[in-house]
Image (cartoon, rainbow, N blue to C red; front, top):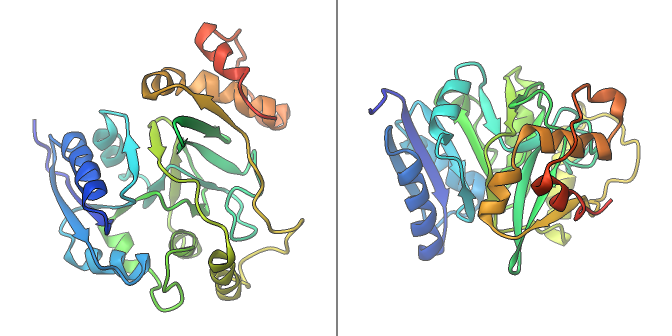
Length: 285
């Protein structure tokens, strides 16, 4: 049955095939909702493109989406529409403590969420803190692969297309600016998602990192260690079916305890079942 909640999906894409594939995904996920898909084919930057799409958006909820993601949860729309009654902005990974332009730098317990990335023919699952389940609250900054926001919040905050006139750190600036404006941000941990990218942290990224630090210098703490991305921890997964089997609370909590401080994760630690054990053994430490 169609609900009264309306979605606007804004996608910046210069690749017709990617745009068609991600649009088909959203059409399936939002089949029981009113929705529109706004394609921006000539964005000068992601901030400029998202602002242009936002001006056209008529939905109660606006989703700013990369064109290379795959969401595997058929209940995605129901979950997001319910959770945005309590939150202003939602994402799939982020941090409760932002120290630099790398949101995952503080690692567990501050970094939160779970994202699968494709690398060649493999799928790699990265897991950070997932407590409280299923939505980690108190988030300061969110990764930009998919940002979901109330329309009024998105319009109030907006994307800074003047400073971030490229394709880097528009997401951290948007979400951190929202947090600084006392908006409530959360990270959804129970929605399987695959991103066909690991990001690019080269010279251009460094340029926008300097701009980000300059803009938010009064709100960022003094770094406790050097600001550089680390390898992170992930496990290979054979396919999307295997990914959805292990994408659950108990498995993620075991990983968080193994990688972080046990004192910060109070939860039962049952014996891993056969599926979880097989993937547990594949993690890099």
